[in-house]
Every structure is written in C-alpha cells, then in structure tokens.
Image (cartoon, rainbow, N blue to C red):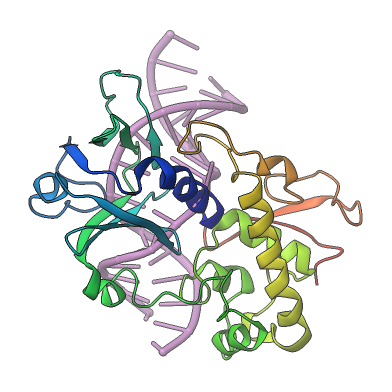
Length: 273
DNA sequence: AACAAGACCTGCATGC
DNA sequence: TGCATGCAGGTCTTGT
C-alpha cells in the first residue's frame, strides 16, 4: 500500500488524536506479521504515553514515555486507522490499541508484509531496518551531488536504484515511475549515468511529486485509506503509473509498461531519455 | 560489492 | 460455476 506520501499522510492523521495519549489497552491478535512481534509486545505497550509520532522512510515511529520507540511498517497492504466504531475485529485486524480518550487504533494487514518492533530510542539509528537507509528525499541531505555519489559505479537501471532504499529512502513503485517521467529520464537508463544535469533534474522531480502527493492525501489504488478513513486522491494525478496505452501528459505518445526486476514500470518512450 | 531472482501472504480480476 | 493464472503500494534472503 504505502510509499512515503501515504505513510506521511497516516502520520499526520494520527498526530492530533494520539500525541500525548496513554495507551490503555493493547490487543495483539496473532504472534507475527512478517516476523514475530517482540516478546511481551502488548504488555510493554500498555500504559505508555505517546510522546511524538515521527516518520523515517516508510516507517512510523511512535516515541513513548519510557524511552522506547514503537516502529511500524505497513508493508504492501497494511493500514493503520482510527475508530472501528465498536465493531468486532476482522480476521486481518492484527493489533488493536485503545487510548485513554477512547480512540481505537487498528492495524490491519491481509498480506502481513508489515512489521513492528519495540526498540530503545538510543538504539534506533543502529536498528537493522534503519541503519542503511539513504537520505530523506524531502530533507536537506538529499541533493544532486549526494544522489549522483550514491549512483556512481552502479550498472543497474535507475528504476531499480531508486527503489533501493539505500539510494534515497521512501520511494516505491508508483513514485519512481512518476518522478522519472517528470525528470524526463528513462527508467532503463544505467544508474551511474544519472549525474550532472540529469541529477539536477531528478532531485526536484522527486521532491515535487512527493510533496504534491502528500498534499493530496496520498494515492488510493486498492485499499489505502488515511488514518481517518478518507481516501487520498493523488492517483488521479498520475501521469504514467498504471496508464499503459494512455497518452503521455507531456507529448501524447502512448505510455508504455515494461517489467524491471519483476515489477511494472510505466514511462513515455518519447520524452524520457 | 553489486545484482537478479526468490521468498513471504492474501485477495482480486481475468480468461477458459 | 470452478479453476488456473497473473498481478498488487515492500524488502529481506539467497545465490551468482
């Protein structure tokens, strides 16, 4: 489900209802997601107060008043939403958390590619899932020279390199296609050739597409919803993703679909070089 | 070290 | 209708 804009939208939606709240009841309804949940997960979360909710790449980081951080990754199909209206949890509602204000936060994930961990704040940067991540694309450390440095010597496609979270953290299959289209760069181009002018175009293209998507509340394709249950609407602004055969928004040539690394890539063969 | 392919898991659309 | 196939927003693990 989620790339950076969707995760950020969820984060923003949770901040007001959850920040400062004590978690009064935690129900863990199965032992594992992608991996086993940490030992005594529900007990360790129960009674804690949420100090802040942050994001790193596609991870949500709930900082708690005992110095620990509750890490949540939504995988492909994970949802984190507020208010289940008192309904009984469904078969894919794996974690249900209630707060002192009566809010109910449900983690639902039918494919179970999602993950959770509970880790001391001091150890967070060294966590195996976070330590190798590249820069945040909306942060100050992401610029043309840092990007081309990370692409130097890499013979794989620029598409594959941008999906690699070590290059830049937070892009996924949708926004890589969209960003490369905005930058006029072919997804098949060898990664190390994206330097100089091309890198200067790619960095703002990535920033702009992510910012526009966040402003639209993310993209709702199949099952993504915001924490509030509302749908994002950035999918209506896609210029290439899932638009095979449709006219490229810039030059009207038909959008093409190819498979790279086993995953669909959409691009315009005329205006992306 | 870098890379491609395989693995994980469920649900949905399509075609026969 | 049933069944097989392929596809889906991610990323870790394995083998070359």
